[in-house]
Structure formats: C-alpha cells, structure tokens
Image 1 (cartoon, each protein chain N blue to C red):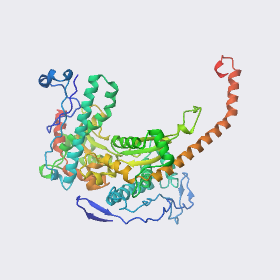
Image 2: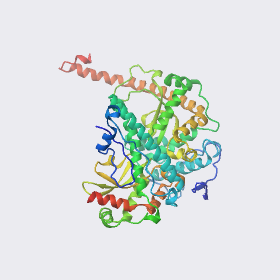
Image 3: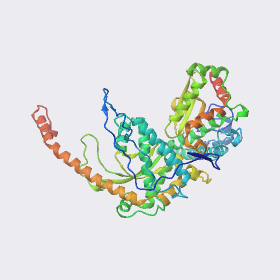
Image 4: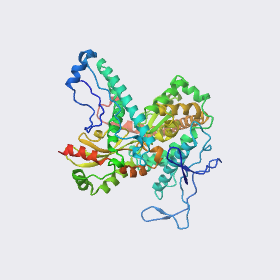
Length: 242
Length: 311
C-alpha cells in the first residue's frame, strides 16, 4: 500500500489525509523508485485574493506571515515527516513509524486546516460576509435557531478554547446534522468524528490574530464574520447532502 | 489606557511603568464575615477590602530586557495576558472557599486531580508567569555554578546537553505550553510501595514540557526554570525578523541572554531542602505505622490458611 500525501488544490474537495492511489501516477513513477513506492509531496496552495484584500478585518501582514511562514512550515515539515516515514516503512522500522505519527498529525493537520481556512475567507467586495441562503441557510436555522445564534456559539467556543486550536462548523455525513466543534493544536476535524466534514473553520492560534488584536481573541472572532465565505460552505454542504 | 497606532497597524497599549520597588505582597487581610445558611461567608457591607490576588510588578522595568524581549512584548504579555488571568482568577474565586488561599494551593485544588475546574487555567497561568518573570533578568545568561552545575553535569552529562534538551522540549511542545527544568524527587507514591533505599542520588534534574497552562507542580516536581512557548511570548519580537524558526531562536536568546542562573540555583537549594524534609517526614510516618502493621501480621498467623509468605 502506497501512501499519498495531500496534494493541495484550490478546488472544492473534501480534504482527506489519504487519497486513493492513482493508476496513472503508478505507471509514470513505477519501478524507477525504491521498491516501487512513491508519494506526492504536499505544496502550499495559493490564495484566491491578495494578502491585503481582507483588511481591515485581518491585516495584510498577518495574512502574509500566516500563509508564507506558518502554512509553508507545516507543508515543509509534513513532507519531511512523510519522507522519513517512507524510509522507516521500507526498512520495517516500526518504532520509527510510530515515533513519526505526532509530527505527521501536527504538520499534516496544519496543512489540511489552513488549506480549508484560506477558502473560508473572501474579500468583502467578492461576497465575503454574505449570509448563507437556501439549503445551508435552512439547515442552520433548523439546527441552531438562527444564523446569529450559530455565530454566537462559534464565537463563545472559539474564545473559550484554551491555548491553540480551531473552532469548526461541522456537518455529520451520516446524520446530516450540523454541529460546532473545537479541535486542539492542529488536529483536523476528523479527529473529533470520522464522519465530520468541515464547512467552516476559524484558526484561533495566536498567530492568526496577535499582531492586530493582541490577546483580545473575542474581537477577532466578532470581526472575522465580515469576510466569511459562506458560498464555499454552502457548496461543500450541498455536495455532501446531495 | 491610551491607544496609539503603530507600524503594525495594531494598537499599542500604554500602561504606566510599574514601580520597581520591592514586591508589595499579594495579599491584603480579609475582614471577618458573617456566615450564611448555605455555609458561605458574606462580608459586612463596610468591608470594601477582600483578599485578592494582585498582578505582581515585574522585577525590572519594561525596557530593561531589550533587545531580547522588547517593551512592547512586556506590555502585552505582562500587562495584557498575565493581568487578564489575575483578573479572571479573582472573579472566579471571589466568595468561594478558595478565596484567601495561597496561589499554589488554589492551583492544586483547581487542578482537581486531572479534571481541572475553570479557575485552574487562570491560577496556573498566574503562577507560571510570576515564575517566568522571576527566571529572567537584564544581562542574564552565562553559566550556572556550584551545586546546580554539579547536578546538571551529573544528570545531563554537560551544560550544553541540558540546554539542547531544554530547547528540544520547547520546540517540540506542539501548540501552546511551557518547557521546564525541574528537580524531581524519586518517590514511589503508590499505595504502600516504598523506595527501599532512598538516597539523595535518586533526586534528579529533568527537562520536561507541558501543554497550555499545565505546570509540573501537579506532578509533585519542583520547577527550577521555565520558558513560555505560547506564541504571544515571542511573536512580536521574533516573528517579524523573518526568521525561519522563531521559537527556537527565542529559546536560544532566552538561555543565552536572559536566564538568571542565580535564581535557578536558589530554587534548587530550596527544592533539595524540601526533598530532604519530606523524606524525613515520611520516615517519621513509617515509624508511627509500625505498631499497627504488626497487629495485622498477627491476624494472618491466626488464620487456618497456609500463609507461608507472611513469615
């Protein structure tokens, strides 16, 4: 079984840690690699907007650092860990395989989460902040009472999260129910439930807001709704509930 | 507080510099109160003063640690984060039975044996930050000496190895947390299991890391040195220098330029004395217990069953 790393794209895909093996890739890479094993390296996805396009909600400086340094380092370290994992598997070194899991979870999770996050945000003049309509809008009303109630719940849970982590609007694939979840550090949403699909995620690590909001995380959470890309969330929702 | 725009596009809080005078004491006396039916204490209306934690002044002024830790960072870190924890802790313990207790007692009580109560994170962060500010000083760094150096070389091989372990712990603490140098007394604390030959040599220096607000007091270690690796500790000063590994560079500067090894030595001395004292106490307790234990042995001898092990 070959491992495949997440190949980051801007398109709407349900992000999962292991994509199915692609036959064409096998044909291309095939026997020239050691023991026929290969993996695709992860790469930093581009933003769909300029760094400064989300101001004044999130400063251009934060966006630049967040994307070019933090997300990039997750990608780099994830690729390093995968390479080491590959070598460990080839050698049959079980303790190395196990030892690498925390680095993979942390850096891979960071890559997954931030890839979703950049798509969750949109400049105001491109539709950022516009409320969700149709099926997602109705589902929110059904499961939370109103959009305001949902936002308040997310803000409360995001503000209460100790240390570093993420707050999510999640869809349960099997029950089709929406819920608000939090994950610690860079744990992706699936660590809270294998059937959970992320519709929206808000990064509440300090690096996401510190330069602009200091330690006033609630202010950051209050403001980020102005650039929230509900269209993306709706698309993911509709695809999953089709 | 005034807000001024800075080049970051953020707002800078200007708080007045704290007095550099000696530590004022964290407690004011609590006035006696009236017991209510539910067992609480209601203070008489004239008692405006209640026992409250205060934000301890820094042992140095806000720009004395530059350029390693800037005034801006201290204003936000001490004046913002640390202060907020003090305020929040006070509001959570006011009127409860924790009100008036020492900070360490509050910390251990709210840790609640692994099921922390809401006040824990604030109590622990107040303790951690007090400890952190006292661990550093202007023109710090250099090398430890005396007993501390002796134990470092004994338990790590060399000073550089200890620093390497310390830095490794700091950068591998994923997310928020702390890295520590601590003194660990080797005590078996399980039922009646006893270290059969306790000696001073069992007590060791260890490097460890902890997430978020956790600190090693809950594991009964004696912390000697701590570095804050929450992003807020280094973000302003190291993020914008376009360094690849901000946290590692911060921790390097921390040990090379800021750490007060005198304070760490002093803490070690207290910890070692404490360990000896605790050891003596336990031996005294064991002596007291010997008489009842022999009575229990007699019961086994009287029974019908074959209890050859008790002999």
